[in-house]
Length: 383
Image (cartoon, one colour):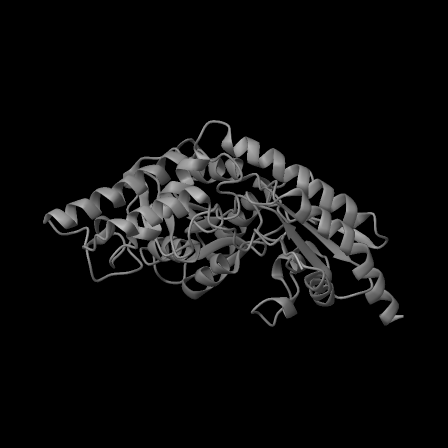
């Protein structure tokens, strides 16, 4: 049976450009610490910095602003640690429940959460952020030490008004972090113009290898490193860099930086997810979750009345289609999705469908064909 992968929001296949770049590097057979001054070390350093340049170019920042990490999760933790260890005393942190668990958990470990309200589409508005800032001042005697605002939601795809939130925080002198993991490579992101203090991105979400990402730091900002014990990454992240991973990340970034590439992939993804959404919601009792208009092009999410999502995931899998659910059963967590709970919808009946650079019409067709029958069979069993 042919397989059809529609879980790109979890991780997307390695792009050919990244695969080729990593293979070419492996074929060179050079092993060295990029911090060494011998010839081998200088060759590795040059390759690492070329990759950093490529990542920086995609996000319109200077290479020195890019701290290479082991992925988006480390980048988020490094951002939170770097800010909050500098202020201490469990400082207030403004954060919405729709933020990724890495953002929420890192913040509660060191700080005191001040919730940012969201609406039924999972949107974080500047007004809600302003309200959280005022509550922080009233309840804690100070504004938040850090405000989080994701660029786009990882479960329902809603694109946030993050530009306005960043502007609000900059006007008030509040440090702001943007989790751009779900948006990077799918939306054009000029992080220099945006002006966020910190932004996290991940390689494997945009077609690079897993195990590498970056924390992008605003020029002039100094934060405490999460990992200490070495002077790598200009003293901002200790540990020998994953050079091969960085090369793959850089190659994927360079491919996406080609003129028109992101726009072309976004149009294709929007066409595919529009079809998936239309087919799913044509089935009775299936409703869209999140903002179906202002969303990243590759993610749609639906709620299915009458059956839990886990059996739907398994039924589609039997039909050769891989998808994901926000329910607790289909993830590592035993708790319902806090994203969907914050939106006021049933997280146990949600299904996320996500496409990527390698998606073809046959993948979409397979899901469109299988979905109604899977839901009908499960409902008939329930009744």
